[in-house]
Length: 312
Image (tube, rainbow, N blue to C red; front, side, top):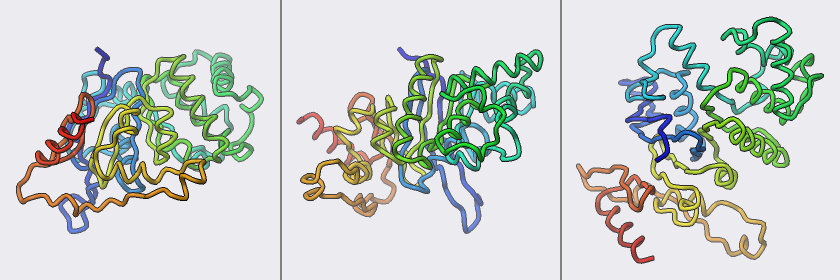
């Protein structure tokens, strides 16, 4: 059985907690990520997926719940030494390749920052060689080390962001919409690079995105978020071929295909949360409809989905 690398248990991230303007950005979600896999996390803007990633890596302190990495609760780590060790194992690739690189630093120093913090280079010559190697790993060359970020295209800058994340030899990388700011022609190149690096280095990814077609290509399993809740979690192929939650169905119905006839006749589904008609006190929870396929639903909805799935 695959080894659990990360366990999220009842994670909550509330902003302005307890106040009138409280925002439940992440509202009591639980899931696991297994070593060597890619878990895709999708949903519309503002659903809480990026906040989930930032809370996992402790850019935000969790309001409640647990983030268990390699058997240790991340949010229990208090000492600088513990946090430093944790930060080496878990890295993040940010959404905006323009804002995430310091414009006043040369590429050499941007990529070597992690090496310097963790003391991973014995001397300046080794530091330089490690940076050169990282640049080549992400499809750039050593001459790029002496340039500033503004001298690169968006795709190249995201490659620099990937090189920076790889510098400390992490096990787990949170990729927070790493292709959303890139041209479509460049997106596939970056995703292919991430897949190649995963195979070479045995990396585990949380891949956060809103582009469902690209998420399917890179992910082993996919979680769907809606207003801070995880509403469906399933293997990628299963989610696309048999979406069970109405919100997931609405997302998938919006994916365009390069087929004029299909597009002309495509019926887009809309999701209305009021359509559930939950009774007062009715328990709504993640339930396993088929093996590995979880849906946030009531007992009544669960039984209906179970019956429909068994009839197929």
